[in-house]
Length: 453
Image (cartoon, rainbow, N blue to C red):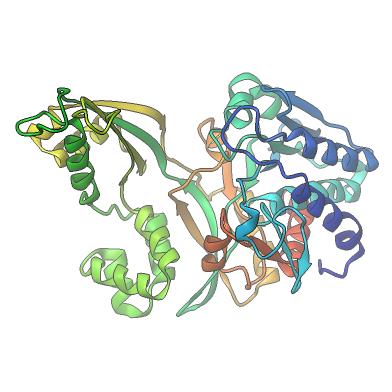
């Protein structure tokens, strides 16, 4: 597939640009998002292809669109294309273009959501319809599904979480392709692209301290909860967890390293700090991906204390974003944090995990990964595919938790590097090149026939 193909120009590009223009901005409030705008856009497109879907609502105006084409063999595995419709906010004054105009400039489409992840959603939609039209009798051996979700950019409460908890029979699938992956890095062994095979777990922790109120003019000997919170943040900021070098971490480290010395240091540990600093100097984004992939991380990001400037704070909260690797338990997490605070300070804090989702990982011993890899190698015969284990989360985690094999991947051009992707996702002047879009469309068009070959 190229940007000059009629399918790309006449079907994909108008659909993709309209999804951007629909501006389904998710602020985190239940009434935001308005994903129904893009649900209607997709319904109109599928209707023109003779395909009809089902819309699920957990919140007014926030639809989730599902299409299923039943397979000819009920024993064959099912495959789902899954994307989301919502995007994060964009401050127009910060951009060099209108973030919701989907302007084409310099052979790129500019706009909020172009890389996260409307490029996937549009390519999956058109690829789904095109694949079905090419299949014998309009069907494959197994069920092929397309799902466009609401609310991914918040918690998934009105989308993935709602559907997997309340409509699992409708949305279950054996295999899934979704975000995030396909971007490139230059390595000392040639170009490589990443395929996400797993995600760290999420543990949001609230630490609450009590103090004694008093007049702010007489702080001597006061039990100031704000000071306790400040000291807790300082100690958590210094917390360093040991590296656990699982196979996915070693795969990432080997691809990102330059030279034998760095490769040994990153994959086996001796001199790991030195090697990570060298990697950070070359590519900060790549270093952050690798750093988080191998250890539990603790980021104290919110402090709330006191109510009035002349009153000693009698209450303080510290909110900590913890991302945990496979095997980490709630008890282990609390023990690590309390040990970092120290016995005396820890005793002054109540500990609460406000949100918990365990780490998840998909194996590669299955028919989907070879099909995915084969299409990648045909497009980029000089490149290789590398596992990626991410610190962030996608909606795919809800399916992995129920046993679905989930990969985050699409086929892109070498212009979409990990560094470029990292700067553009949720960033200013988000954009994607036309060649990447065409490759992605071709990938989702061809993948079903390869998967069920």
